[in-house]
Image 1: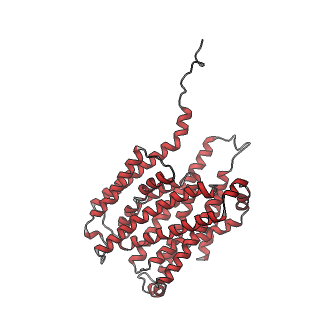
Image 2: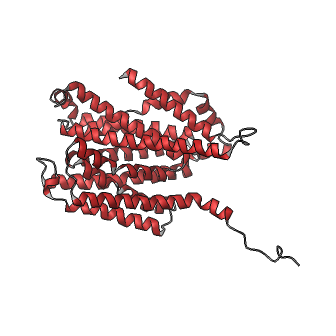
Image 3: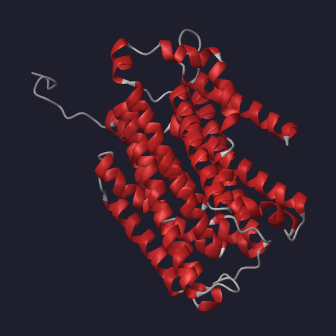
Length: 384
C-alpha cells in the first residue's frame, strides 16, 4: 500500500504544480507566444481533469457495490474510506508556493479571513461532507448500482436550485429544461418493477435507499454551492492553496466524525469477521476498500482541477456526465438488467446534462461574442 501511495502522491503534487504554472501570468516571450498553443494546453489539462473525474467516480462507485455484494455490511466503513485519502495533499503545505500564497494576501484580505470564520467554514463543510457520504452509503446498500447512479443525476438539478439562492445563479430556458428532464429521469425510477431490487431486499429498505440517495444528491449539491459561497465571502481567495486547504481540513473533520461513528455504532467489532467472510477473500476485501479510497481521491484530484480552472458548478456538470457510464458497466460486471425504464431514464439524464452544459458553454463564450459583435454606428462615426 505504501509503494502504491507514493506514485499517486507524486502525481498529485505534479498536477498541483501544473495548476500553479497554468495560473501564473505570462510575460515577455511567453506572452508573445501563439495563442493556439496556450489554448491547446488548457484543453489538454481540462481533458486530463475530466478523465480523472469520470474514471475515479466510476471505479469507486462500482467497487462500493462490489463491497456490499460480496459480504461487506459496514455503512460507516463505506462512509470513511472516501475521506481518508486527504493526507496525500499534506506535503504541498510545506512547499514554497504554498507559503508564498499566504504572504500574497493583502492586509484587508488577512483581516477578513478571521481564524474563527475560516474554522467555522471547515467545520460546517466537513460535517455536511460526512453526512452526505453516509446517505450515499445507505443508498448504495439496497439499490442496484445502475439505479443508484441514475438517481444521483438529480444532483445537477439541486445544484441549480441552490446556486440560484446562494450564488445568484440565473435561470435560463436551458437550465429549466435541464431541471425538468433530470427530475423526470429520477422520478421514472420509482416505477421500476420489483425485480429491479437486489435479492432479499424488502420494499421498505428499497424505499429508504431511494430517499437517502436523493437526499445525498441534494446534500452534495448544497456542499458545492456553500463551497463557492465560502470562497467568495470568507476564504476570499480562490487559489490552489485555498482549495488544497479546504480539501485537507474538511476531509480531516469528516474522517474524524466517521471514525467516531464507526466505533460508536459498534461496527468496528465486525470488521475482522467481515474481512474473513468476504467472498473474494481477505486480501480482496482490503484491495476493494483501497480501490474505493484511491478512486475517490482520483475523483477529488480531477474535481480540484476543474474547480480551479473553471468553477465548482462545471465540476458538478462533468461529474453528472459520468453517471450514465456506471449503469453500462453495471450490466457488464454485475449482470444487472437494463430495462426500458432505465434506458429512458439514462437518455433523459444525458439530455438534461447536454442542456445544462450548453448553457455553461454559452456563458463561457458570451464575452467573446460581445467583443466580436459589430458596434452600431454613432453620429460621430458618420462622415460629414
